[in-house]
Every structure is written in structure tokens, then in C-alpha cells.
Image (cartoon, rainbow, N blue to C red; front, top):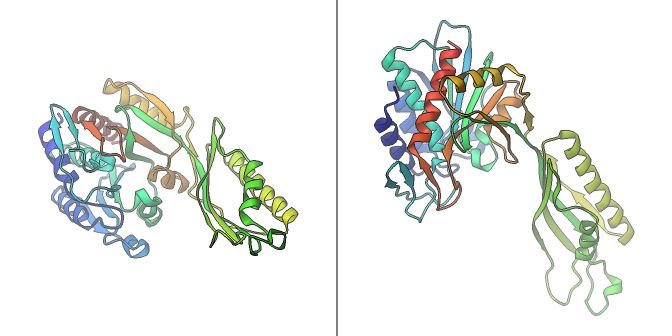
Length: 369
């Protein structure tokens, strides 16, 4: 049923439209035209004004008398370098020419959704009410999805974000809770020749950091100090040091315990040296963990069986728009579409994987009609 040639051509058209975060206008207009031609009610929200993008989220609704509402979503933005993308076709493999990313993250997800909708129209297939959201600025903090109006996704029964690597049939059922922000130590400057008159902020910070586990904390939890800055001159005791801190965990309780320990450690060390702590680390988007006994997993498992794809449930240490929709009370899976080596100039994808993902989406539509 899948028109693989059409799917491939549409994917190639999509990836050649530059759409770095905050500059999604061209691909947004392209998608608005496609969704309109397929008979969806299409509109653009005001999210772009909020985040500083030249486009808002693109939303399409395919109405139905069916009581079910199902969300399908992918994001429009890609990471750099993507100013000029020249895809190279090698049989069923589509890759880059080595000068840019390919943009399969997440144009592959978009292409699968568009092909699904095209087939629904061509074959006059029964379907639930379908809500399509093509979001902006996912790569810089899930910003577009966070600004989707709750009325748009009201009464949605299930959500499917198509934004993960690996073969079709893989579903991300858990993603981490996270926190990030700046930790600042304020010491006291003095001439380096009279260090006892100062408080070296870097020394204070190093004592605190040495008491923490940076990197892999346990199987579910990581933390990182990604950047450090401070100091003005080689002959001045460093008065201030700033560090960017990030932590992630599949367990909210573990994340909160780590944040408390980190803050307490820095406070105690700062107090012992007479320094001041400014801790601006805050929790971010909620994580999620979907039970294997849940209705959405049973639905996905049935769809997988009907398409002869291998089911695999995985957890991720990265976030996606699925985090946002789950936090809004919509059971949402992040589905694989075949993307590989994403965020690098070595990115590639097999068109058969996008086709298999499309088959799976059609079966999910069929089971919820």
C-alpha cells in the first residue's frame, strides 16, 4: 500500500529545505500546503512569537465521527550544519555528502505522517479524529510542544511522536526527568602575591565537585558539568567561577535527591571557605515511564503484530516532544523511524525503515478508527 517512490521523493524535498531551530518558516509553509491539499483543517499557532522563531507550530486536524482522537507529531527544526543539505542516494540508503546533517531527525517522522495521511485520503480509509502537530524548536528545549494550546489536544486518547532512531517497531516508553542551570561561587579577589587575603572561587568549586559523582551516578541517573568560566588575570585570586550543571534520571525521586545533595555539598563547602553560593539549577520538562501493561502499549503491540515488525520497548536518556505530551496527561510513545548517526554529518537512513514506520502508523489508525 505504501507508495515508496512518493515517500522517498517527499522526504528528499523536505530535507533540502533548511530549517534550523528558530528558522522553520520555509518548511512550515511547505507543510501547511501539503496538509491543506489533503483536506485537513490547518492553522499555525503563536508559539513562534513566544520563542523567537519565524514560524509557529503547524497543526492539522482530520475530522471524524469516531469518538477517538489520536495525536501524531514530529518536529520541523534540525540541528546545524543544515544551511545547505545535499542528500546522496545509495540504493535504499539516503545519506549526506559529508558537509551537513541529513535532517532525518525529524524530517523522516514528518514524511511518514504525510504518507499516512495521503493514503488515508487516497483509499478513503476509516480513521479516528487525527491531530497532527509539526512543532518548532524541539532541538533547543522542546519549546514548540510546550506552547501547544491545551484545547488543541483536549480529549486526545493516544499520542505518537515519530522521532527516534532504530528500526520501526521500537517504542521509547521511558525518558528522563531533568534539571539544568548555572552554579556560581563568589569568593574574594586579592593580589596573587597575597592569597591569604582572598578566597579563590575555583578552589572552593573544586573542593565541592570532588565530593560529588560527576558522570554516571547509577543505571538511571547522570550528571554533568559542561562548562566552567571565571577569573580575570593570572596575578589575581579568582573571585568568581560559574559552572553549567545538568542532571538526568529516569526516577524523579533520584533526580530530586541528587539536586539536594549537590546544593547541600556546595553550601557546606562555600560556608567552610567563607564564599557565597548562587544556585540557579532548576528542574526542566518532566520525564515519563509508561507501563508495559498500559492500553497504549497493548495497542502498539497489536499494531506491531499486524505489520510483522519486531516490538522492542526501550528507555532513553534524552528528551523529545513525547515528554511534553505525557506531562499533559496524554499517553504518548516516541516511535522509531530508522534514523541513524543523527546530529552528525554521517547521518543516514534507509527508506524502507520510513516505509515500515508508515505501515505501523496506518495500523495504529486502523485499530483506533
